[in-house]
Length: 371
Ligand code: OGA
Ligand code: NI
Image (cartoon, rainbow, N blue to C red):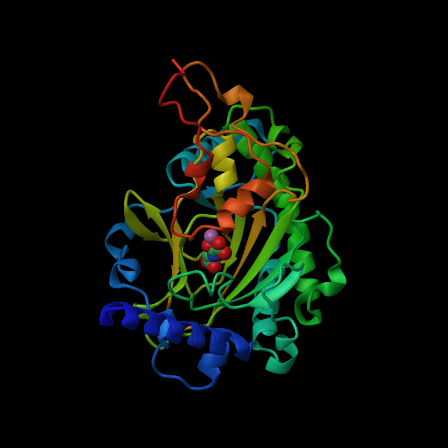
């Protein structure tokens, strides 16, 4: 064995040890900050090309579209809104909404509840720490052992997507009411969004709802502590969402960025607004009409930053078959993807690094013998 190779292995086993030591604290990145560190531990350090990119020069004239949902019941408003959603979903894969019907205090309480969960007594919080697939788990970087660098954030996930049922008693008491209240409102908004997205695809309003896109969901509550060396880390690495649709609530700190035209754009925090984005599975059933785009969260000197991403993900145990919607395909517009079940899609999604374009494994190969 030459020295390079043994050096490589040496470093890898160091890294494995460091990951385990970090994981075993069950205190997440918040625990590191509380312990008073002033340099970034190696497991969080990313290569320069991954952390670079600044959008400030573009922000003035171009940004993720903001869509006002007020007056939806009036025909002329709805037409405009559907048109704006279509345009944003095709070009950005992201938009923000205001006047969406969720009361400000419900959203503020949600962010407060998430923050209280992460800032409570660490002995109580540890009880929820796990890497198992359970309805309620708290951990730091769900892909800690498979990714190249760890994310500078901790996450509480409440998830009913395996069966569509949730035992709400499992949610930590400190944020239970806040999460349940927010969830009920987001589920209603999700209904409205699925109608608007159906219309934006040129389908009848109840089309996506009937495909049961909203039966299973995950509410993923992030806490991004202040980072000692933010220029070396990311809060969330570049990824696309596996969901059909994501509704994200963020606080006022900022850091979420969307890749558009090969450049990173900040999603400006707007108090009361929600960020909506198209996930991989909606891109696939829309036959690429709507785009699931790369996004990430920068690490920051200031914080904590709190956010809650609500994924409409379908139900994993359902053996329902999904495929590009028949009404959207034709002789000129052949299906890009083959049929898939949600389970099959997720197994593929979680078995590959986040930075990969995972939809391609479901693409139909037209290269030979098909003409
Ligand atoms: C996610 C995500 C963004 C944020 O959870 O998939 O993109 O602002 N979160 O926390
Ligand atoms: Ni995301």
